[in-house]
Length: 500
Image 1 (cartoon, one colour):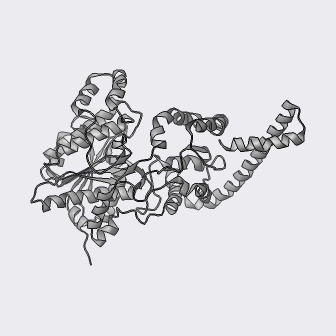
Image 2 (cartoon, helix red, strand yellow):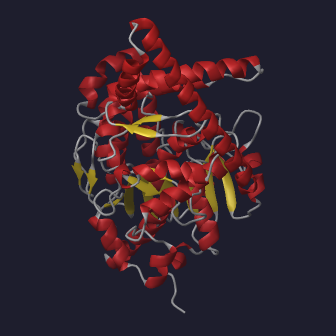
Image 3 (cartoon, rainbow, N blue to C red):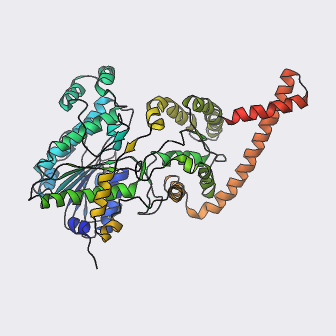
């Protein structure tokens, strides 16, 4: 039976993971425990929550191979106690650094502290670790978002990291905000800017020990593992599928002809694990000296491109295949190419229904949230516009070349080639996954939800008929024209209304 060189590499090796409670971190832990049975100790950097210790948060895992390390990449020395730090220095062999703030709207002070200085703190720890075999830094394909065609290489730093750190330490948020346009230059936000600078922190130590950088694009639900469609993240399509399945998100600003670069979480995690193995193997081939910094794109745009026009007609059918029992209205999602048209349609299809539903919720003693949620989306549109309507092409030739070097066992166990991914089946599974893992609705209530979906359809049709009958009567009343002429105007209004 063929062996797995990747599994053999991690057998007995101890792994330190930052961002261990995030989407990527959780999935790394699950994958290692499931497919690397002889992996050494997993040290997970975690923040304690109020009233709940890190140990208590991990108690349900019941794994002797997991050791929680209380800390925070945003604190000096990672907020780790001297005793725990010495434990890491003495025992860790592989470091996966996935902790970051993903907030596009966060201040430069905060993103510098977490994304840039946090990476520097991890790198400083790595330099102290006695037997470090690999450091894998989880970056983002969008760190070079000022380019639309991006290669798997390190691009020049947009600013001096020391200058940015000094400014973030000495200036307040308001002063930094004024400087942002000059500092960020072509970067769309502080996230991509600081994540770009963080890559150079890794590059600075690439000659000391094996280092790799992986750049995922928008990370989406699982393709195959641990379960097709599994997700715990509301970012990207999972989030708007969740809103659409509730019936509260009815319009989405998105050009269906533009390539949307999505990459499944299991492919991302396999890429991270494989990179750790690979950079170490290069050192062995290089006479014990670390090879050049290895950078890989975990992306789909140039290899397996996805456009929503491929399945525009299928999205709503998937929503009705797997409806929610908690839906408040009949799901019907439409994509809108224009931002100003979306704003107009949002008033009609989002805000007005949200005001009514929030009022009903408040009367019933619940917590009204829909208007606030739609306001948050509205206020974020200008910042997100570049990411909504820009098409990027991320080259992934080096990742595909890496996949070809793996033996048949590792190609199957740690798959990073998405050539066989069928997007329509994938998104069908994603919508089911959103239903189960984000909306927390079990399969056993699916038939009940489908019955409710039919009732909501009837109510939806009845409301539309009532609305257009009201419009018809209003036209006759206000203009004084005959009902026959009013009937001729109605189709025109219906067409124009349908553009929203």
